Image (cartoon, rainbow, N blue to C red):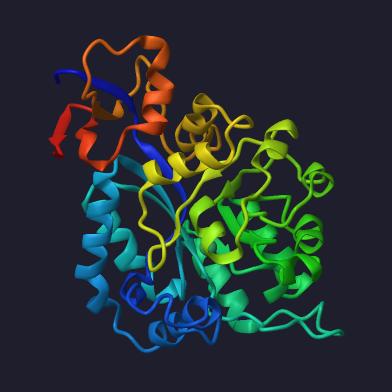
Length: 340
Ligand SMILES: [Zn+2]
């Protein structure tokens, strides 16, 4: 393989792929009008489109993701019942391991007082369908479902060991409406992934049990102008993962994500930690890969474009200099695919 470094294929722990067709209107409209539920253009379009018509576009998105050296994806699938087949098929076709997180079609714009014990029939039906088909469940935010609905998802998915994903405290509004409190009283019995946590203080983070948490640095800077307190997450003993969020907004390239995070959090996050976030910490939650003797290798070989690199510089080299042009091979067991 020449002068290359071998590492496990990366895990993108939070990505929305069903909005790729909106990339050219992003920045022309307010973000909630583009991807917000249920009135945003994404939801409006997805309610009308034939899933088959997205197949070619999705194939291109997944090919691109794969060529960044990513092996595993935690993918949010809006209107899960309609789109899981096409998303899962196209992801697998390029060799990605996909953890599908199917979103029920029913959700509430607000939960009104007095509704907390209600369970929407369509919601329950979707969740049961997802669980029966071995799919994870994606919740938009704990604010979009009643407490009874949140408990129901936790009970049904958690009892089968299926993951649940929810956005938590991405924006100040959702934080002030106590989405974290709702999540902590209902969703922590299952295998729940908390995404964003941008607004949480060190004290808030101290309340989170050891569940997988995901930070989306570039998306958070674009949407809400701040990064989550990843340093505080580490002090709390959490093992945060990295996601790229909406394809409409952010190129799903984890190398860019790592560079941004290192620059903005220099001092609090070393390169070794950042690489753990993209690889072995995801594996520790059952997503993605590590390289270990006796196991089928899922690796990526990265070209080192300099001579005589010192070994104690390896982690810094990976988080500061590697870009997509350096990804030379994907290794899947005995199959080796050349990328560049
Ligand atoms: Zn998201």
